[in-house]
Each structure stands twice: as structure tokens, then as C-alpha cells.
Length: 311
Image (cartoon, rainbow, N blue to C red; front, side, top):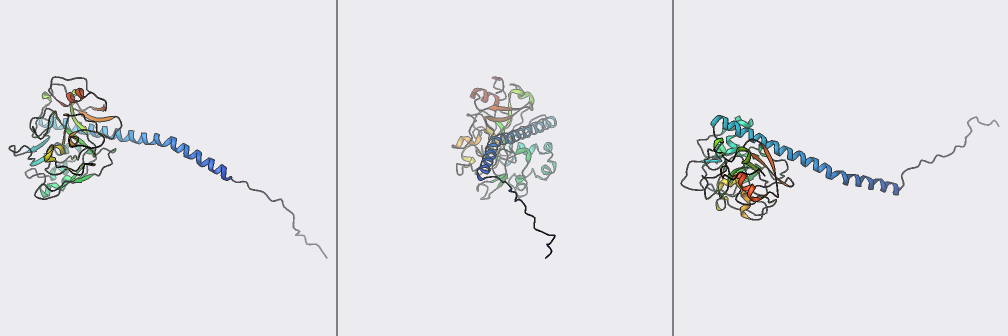
């Protein structure tokens, strides 16, 4: 019998070596360690970017303030009212943020407002819900809008959030709404020449995170401004509607969480170590949380004669 030419040729089996379970676990552990080392650096970089954006927002507001002053020879009012007989009456209520809209590339929004009507008028209030990037700090993760509780004929009002409050100065806003010694208060018309302590020594606007108090760019409106961790509190029982758009230096500022009523008018930040403030010369300063109260207070007053180096 003839042998077939297609004989089976014996071959040597090749063993393919893979990872052992121990080696795989070691690799996973190394990757986990690298992630743990890199994550804080990534988070710090992101926060640095958010902090820079917050600073840029205040610079934009500073330019808008100066442009407004160039046109009207005065800074805008903190908020406006027609009725001076009632210390907490806010009608029509439009605030300094609304007055700056034309200088923040928001002229169409400004032109839609009817200033002969109150801010909580049906036509106007829908525009008060506009979320504007210039008033939003990216580090504040709170909601972009909030709703007041009934105080205006039983009507709930939704307002857009702002993270920046104008500087009333020293004192209680509801007790002396028209005589603030900062640059923004009810019906104010402060001029650059009124800043006898120097524009580079005087706060104009400061940061307020959402947990400290509800703030809006739009208007000072009667009603509740619920605070995180506090349930709800009526602004007319504490600092009045002005607390929605203004802050003061009547007490230490640094509180990261709300735990009692006076905090609604304080400034505060989620940026580690301090708070951004816009000064009246247009510069922005990061004020450390260990600033002395005296320097902090004097920087909030425009003409106390005690100007010190800005904190």
C-alpha cells in the first residue's frame, strides 16, 4: 500500500502566557493609587477655573458700573421705590442689576421691562426669571431660580438667582434703607466724588453663595426668601426686601452655612479661604477669611474717614 504524502507532522504546542490574578490585582491597585493622587489636582484645577470665572464676572459688573456712571454721573440705585413712607415698601423694586443690563450686552432684556409698572407686575416678572451668566458663580451648585412664598396678594414669584450682592455699608438695611454708607441702597445716587475714602478702598459688590441667602439681580420684592438649612424666613421680618439685592458689613462675613437669621445679609463663598469683592475702582480683591473685622467694615463704608489698606 502506498503511503499518503499528507502525513501528519507532529507539532509542538505553544503556550500563550497571560496575566495571573495577582498581577491583575497589582495593576488595578497601581491605577487606583494614580487616580487617588491625580484627582485632588484635577479638582483643584477645576476650582481654580471656577474661581477665575467668578472674578471675571465681578470685573464685568465693575465695567458695567463705571459705564453707567459715565452716562448718568452716578452709580445706579441699590433698588428703587416710589413710596418712602413705608420703610420696607419696595415698589417698584427694580435693583442695581437691572439698571446694568444695557452694559452687560442685555439691552433687549432691559428694553422689554416696563419701568412704569412694579417689578412684580405680570409682564415684568417673567423677565426677572432670566438666568444671566454674569450673575452666576460656577462654584455655587444651588438652583438657578428660587420661588418666594406668598406676600404679594398671595402670588408666588419665581426669580433668577444671583451670586452677587451690592454693598449697602454698615447698619441694618431695613431700619435705614435710604441712608446706607456704602454705594448701593434704596434710591441711592452715589457719585464717584462721594467716595472720600477712595475708590480703591471701597467695596462695591460682593459674593454671596446660595446657602447664605437668596439673592437676585432683578429686584427687591416683598416675600419669603427661603434659606438652605433654615426652612423659610420672611425678608420683611429680618432685613426687608433689600436683602434680596444688597448686603452689609454690620457683622463678620465668613459663614459657609446658614444657621441664624442675620446671615442672609452677609457675604460668603464656596471658594476656599475667602470671598471675592469688587472695589469701586473696578478691581477685584479676594478677601481672606481671617481678615480683621475693622478692616472689613471700613472697606464697606465709602466715607467713614478710616480708610485702611483694602483687606
